[in-house]
Length: 301
Image 1 (cartoon, rainbow, N blue to C red):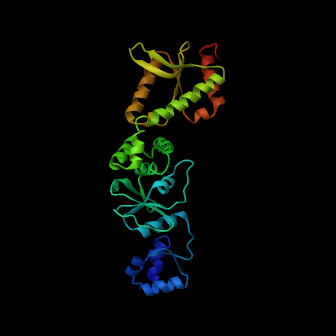
Image 2 (cartoon, rainbow, N blue to C red; image 1 turned 45 degrees about the horizontal axis):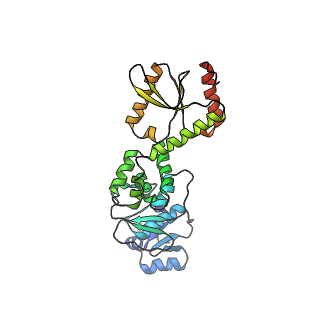
Image 3 (spheres, helix red, strand yellow; image 1 turned 90 degrees about the vertical axis):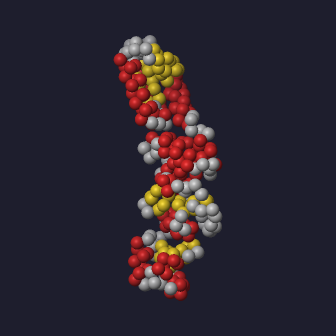
């Protein structure tokens, strides 16, 4: 095989385009002979792989980008899976082309965008992809917004994204249908999840025979009034559900939450914090609350 061709294939996942072959001094005729001898396999028009290279998802994604052109990036479900979304996988080659037209290629889904800024593009192990915020915006166009909201919450909890990043990506996307779907849910996006987990905690404790009071208001000696998700006011025990969304929304919210806890502790309250993962283990949660109640001398224990 031509030395320059082999060198290029070794450095580019075993892929080469007709244009790249010409730049390496390989004529179209020579390229065709490699294909006829089945040393190169045509994947798309003008895109070839070395016969010994296995057809992986990475190779299919990279080949798709080469077929669509230099202004293309993987996006939507392909980018969602590559960034890593819990309980989600995709074998679809889904690409956004930054132009007015939409090239048609067999075996892939191609979108177009005239408002995909460079800040919304990242490199994922050598493959150009939409950034996390823009990925969620695009995905909300092809998957239910409720599902995309859960992915947003998980990425914020994992520090892969901030609420400000997502808001900025939505604004940059303009009139994008996915952006509109997420924008409509942004203000209540995190509160909804917190309320679901809050309800689960209450159900766990009621089933255990130690049901608390819901949304108990406390005014401290310092004059501040706070609302506790659940409480046993007779023994000054409060229960808080720390949803991954609302408590990680910003540094300000995180700081205010700690300040609030300090004020309650100064007044003698004991605060127990639980997360969505905690409430998946009801016996453990109920046992911890029961032990706290026992130390405070509550009859409920």
